Structure formats: C-alpha cells, structure tokens
Image (cartoon, rainbow, N blue to C red):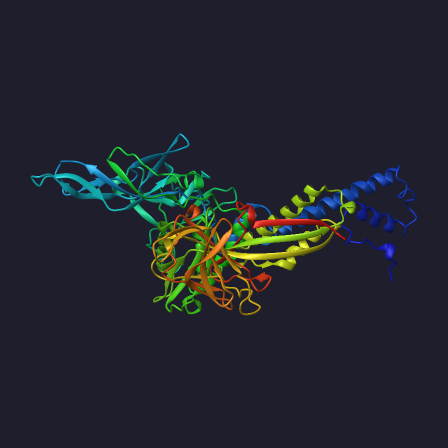
Amino acid sequence: MANEQDRLRVSALEFDSIKNSFKEYLKGQDTFKDYDFEGSAMSILLDVLAYNTHYHAFYNNMTASEMFLDSASIRSSAVSIAKQLGYTPRSKTSSYANIKLTITNSSQAANISIPAYTKFTTSLDGTSYSFYNLNNLIAKPSAFDSDGNITHYESEEFEIYEGKVKTQAFTNDAIITDQRFLIENTDIDTSTMKVHVKASIDTPDEDKVLWSKITNITELSSLTESYAVEESVDGFFELRFGDGVIGKKLQDGNVIEVTYLQTNGELLNGAGKTFTTTLGTVTVIDSAIGGGDREDIDSIKFTAPKAFATQERAVTTEDYKALVLRDFPNVETVEAWGGQDNDPPAFGKVFLSIKPKQGFSLATAEKLAIVKSLTTNRNVVGVTPEVVDPDITYLYIDTEVWWKSELSSLTFNGMVDLIRQCILDYRDFIHNLGFRGMFYEVDLANRIKSKDPSITAIIVNTKLQKRLTVDKLGSQKTTIKFHEELFHPHAGHMSILTTNQFQHRELDGTLRSNCELFDDGKGVVKLKYTVDGIATEFPFSVGTIDYEHGVITLNNKFLPLNVLNNELRFTVEPEYDNFCPHQNILLNVDILDTDSIKIKLEDSP
C-alpha cells in the first residue's frame, strides 16, 4: 500500500496548503533535497506550481459557478441559463401616460386621424422629454357651433409612451448561415417594438408586412409571420425568425425593419402632469407610470424559474405572482390568494396585493393594466383577478436597554445610535421580505444584544398602528382590522387604544378640540376631550372593540374634524410579541415619525 507521502492531497485549494502538500509529497523521495529551503531554486519552482494550481482551481470553481442559475454572478451567465428555461429578461420599459386629445378643426371631416408616433412633449426639472402613441388613432366630432358645424374633435383615452423613436433595418442573406439580427441599443423597450418585413429593398413601404411577436409556440404554423426576441450574451436583444416549420422562414433579400422606443426607464415616472403637441390640446387622465430599468441579475435568478413554472398561464397563486413580477418593473413585491380564503369569501376571484417601488399603492391605470395582462389568454375562465392595495400595519418599537458602559468603547450617544441602527436594519430586513416579512421581538432583542458585549439586558415592547384618512370615515360604520389579538387581561382593564387628536361635535352641536378615542376595557370605544389638563368623556359611545380578533368598529356618530394631515391614527397594544402577517398585510416602521422608535438606555445595576 502506498504511503501518504506518495500521494498529493488534491483537497488542498489554498496557496499555502497546496505548497505544503507538494512538500509532504517530496519527503517520500531522495532525488531533491532542498525543497524545504525557502531560498532554493526548488522552493521557487514549488511556488510557481502552487500558484498555477491555485489559479486553475479558482478559475474552474468560478467557471462551474457560472453554469448554474443559483451561483451565477455574471449577468450574461444568468441570461444564458434563463434562456434554457424559455425566459427572456425584461428590457427597459417606457413610462406611459393616459391622455385625451382635443383638436380644433373646422374641416367638417367625419374624423380626424392621429398618426402613430405623434409627438407629445412634457418637461422634468427643466428638460423636455418626448412621448409617442404607438398606433394610429382617430378623433371624433365633440363640439358644434350654433349652425351645427363641427368646431372640435376629441379622441378617446389612449396611452403615450416615453422615448425616442428609433429604426434599424437588416437585409436577410441566405448565404450567411448564422446571420444575426442584433438591435445594438441597451435602452430599447422591447414591448414597443414593431417588426415589418418587406420582400426586397425595392418593395414600397405600403406593401411591407407587420409580423407579430411569438406568445405561444404551439399556435405556430409554417406560414405564421412571427418573430421571437431574446437577449444575447453581449447584452443586446436579438430577433429570431421561423425555420419554415415553426413559423415562416425569411427569404433571401427580405428586408427587416425594426421600429422601437429608446427609453429613459423609470426616470419619467410621476412626470407628465401636462403635455403639449402640435395637433391640439392634451387632457391628462393619468400622469406617467410604469417605467423601469432593465432586469438585474438578482431578479433574473428569482423570476426565471417561477416564470418557467407558470408556462404562460395563470392557474395557481404562484403563477399570478410570477407573471406580475416578470411583466411589471414598477412592482416591488406581490402577494396573491384565492377568493375562498378572502375575508369575506369571494368565490370566483383571485386577489393580488401589490406594493410598487415608490409608495404603497399602484395608480388605477397600473391596476387595470395588470388585470388586463392576466386575463388575456392566461387565467382560468370564470376566475377574475382583482388588485387590492396593501394594508399597512405600522410598528411602534419601544426598547429599554441595560449596559455596562465601562465595558464598551462607545459613548452613551454612540450606543443609542448603534441600537437605533440595529432596529432600522431589522426594519429593512422585514421590508425586503415584502408580504412575508415577520416581526419577532425576541429576534430583534437578540440582534441588538449581539452588537456589543457591554449590553446585559433588553426589553422590547411593540405597539401596532393603523391609519385612515378622514374622508374614509363617514355616515356608515367603519371597520379597522389589526389581524392580531389585543392585550386584554380582564374586563375593565385600562385603555389599550389611543389616537392622535382631532375636533368633534357633541350631540348639541358644540365643537370640542383636543379629542381622542379610548376604550373602556369592556369592549366599548368612547370619546374624550381635554381642557386645561382635565379630560371629559362625551356622553355617547362611538363604536366597539373586539380584543380577541383585533377589530375596531366605529359607528355613524364618529365624525372627526380638522385632523392633522387629514389622517387619523389608531394605536393599540397587542397580546403577543410576534406578528406574522398574511395576504395583503404589510409591516412597516415609519422612520419619518420620531415616536416610531424609542430607546431608553440605562446602566446595569
């Protein structure tokens, strides 16, 4: 049996370990004696061999990593692997606005045409940007003079997209077997792409044919005039055409004309309050939304397997989520659930709650676009998708920390800042999990304690808050659901409900200021007002509170006035110290509210 010294340890991958393995191997021979002398030529040769081995081990490890979607670190590698799953990463997407156009014209024509790629201009921070309609439209008569003559024409609502109109042409050459049709522009919005094919360069434009993008390969025949778009390894998008069996094949000399928008992505989101055009007057229905940058590697790695599982159909809730994340770049996180699981049940529906990248709710136009996308040859017949806003639960975190200052290099203020940053990091951790973000007081306490050895003890107390705008509180009853059991150790316990202050009228019409809500510990919600530090109850109740289910119900007697920022805040004390949201519940810590994080730091006894 061979000695250990007769074999190299192939498990050694670091430089020093590789060199020591060589030395151990050389101990088993008598030809070379100076291998263990650092100044010898043999030692230098061992350095070269160890470096070469280490280099190749590192190179092979990185190469192998790029072969799998989970471990790929280069975007082009992830793109190539996703292509095997039938997934094309999202390009940049143009912001789009919803408008109507009024044209002053006395020609008495039946309709006025609005050509495709009519230019509409808006400005942002002093810079002008162009938007275009992608299709031909018409404006119909909308106003007449006293003699019945047409004076104005008006279009229906339509969408305009931000960008610059670009055109690129290719000529198919049958001699070139591997000819590629690369669109060498990384700012392209592929959803705005139009591909026309002409028989030859001499064919007039009116005879060119619009080819469609492939959406379902099973519907293709040898005569289907269609194309596919995929991203190449160099980051450009590439057109692919049929082979005469699956899709129509290009003929020698065919000219391919590609028209698309070169976009600024998400830059124009929220812009477009006003537009101008040479055709007439623009009425803005919805300002610009929906713009996004090209899909990054993390999104590709997350979305590609899920998109492959959906197979372009929306059947399960995971299908709905994957399709929305893939097709709408403005979406940050999404949750979906069936109508049978809704409260109250709504059979025949699937609900989606979506948080955009800015703010907490989507614009109406975006919601309609998402529903339209999901119901176009994707979802099950008889099932209607509905987009609902996230239900935000705000966390108010009160932390009491004991420490031994002599064991820490931090000052008092430095320690407070450290604790605050730890809470903010935990808030970001929950935020990144979206609708699956859970809050555990013990987890937060452990994270804080691990930050510095001088911390000896921590107590974390958390309250929950819901916010409603006053215009949602009217003559009908209002229900506020916390989806958590509330603290209620016994009947008659002190109030666990507080609100910000507002004005309210008594039954005789007297207007009271400094009013607040509270509960009487027996399930009744009441009103009180404070004058010179003395609180007085209103002579009527305004609702009930269900401690077990965490529900506050306000009746039509509750009519608050003059609330700061028109927002009423309901804060309660929960029974338990961990919160596991479901469906459209989203946890958040309002860092703009200084009361959302309170820290009390004391010396340990």
